[in-house]
Image (tube, rainbow, N blue to C red; front, side, top):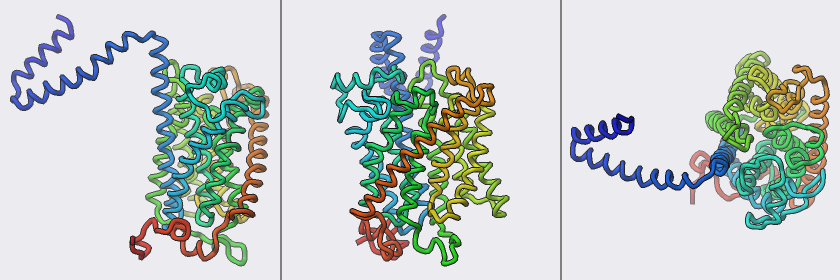
Length: 473
């Protein structure tokens, strides 16, 4: 007797010996499952194996992109928790606009600049592309990455990365930046500054030709966002009361460590899509191995930051520990597909240590960064980029060997050139951008607005009206 016959007989016996109500429920459930499954099975028979592979790949990439999109909830919670409650609504508004403006500006010009036909510096085709436009599609379909997914899938996965780069700056400039100025920045970064870096590395540009490797964005996303954050925080200036007359830094505590840690955990979860989804394929791609390196680096980063803060301050700082986990994630983003598990632990440990001392350093030079975004994304992003040149193994990286795998200094030099070029481009363009905003529509809020909180001055209501002693009317 076949397995299916045995299963059918067992189900029949079970139905006969159950109550009429449960029997009816089982029959209804069976009918529903049959209605869902049978047409699918019948339709699947019409697929070729290649079509089925592409369909599975696209489902994975869209799911991974959705995880990256959900990371904005994590950024919102991290930034809100690490800042004061009188600016909570402002933080939420900026993160909403990062997504909204980023989606539109990247569609209009960002994606064509990043992946359109052009030259080694910039793409020059496919403006405001349509998925039904054969000319626009041909601009991107010739790329050798993600040949198993269609144009819509590629665009969705890339646009959520662009919006992520933009939102990094929000926390570094929090509590003293005009909302109108921030909106202009978000549009320009996602439309032009970020896509140029992306074109160099992922769009067939000059760094790609050199052999530069950045699997999921330690440079493209995190160094770009971190250096933009450095330029913005330096130009907007420190929050009122952050530094005393002697130049010493005062602690301005965030209002909710639980919110911040919840945001960090959401970001960690979203990073599985960020890194593993960058395979741009499910069939034949060992994306689970990337999840292993991603997890190990994050855990090692948290341990290193906790230990370093404990040694230097006498207490294991919770916020610093959370930033250590993020540092491990940022550090492993470039090499996640190219290194062994043991190297991921080392990369995370170094990243978690770097972030603590980097936060101390920027405090000493009076660059006020309420959430540590410059250190987490900028400084550790550079470390993650260089780590490819140290730890990449040929079996995982398509033949590229890092210094510790016997490849010498060649790849490390290429990684350093790419990182320096990104710092120069983003630092220069963002400095010009923020200075232009400062001298036109205004970048810095008034002192009275900052003291009262940007929720009221910028948006007309509190994020926490009851806690602020205000009515909702």
